[in-house]
Image (cartoon, rainbow, N blue to C red):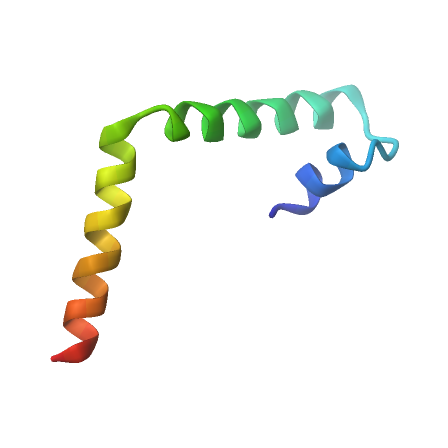
Length: 55
């Protein structure tokens, strides 16, 4: 997990700009988690890397 997000979660003092950046990252993750095509892309990449490693 990025340090910025870790600091944001622990409610440590961060600037307004850092807070906005953290929220942008979190929103991107949220969008990806809700997108089945993103999940399938990551799953297929994992399977392909594992298959290539076995060869």
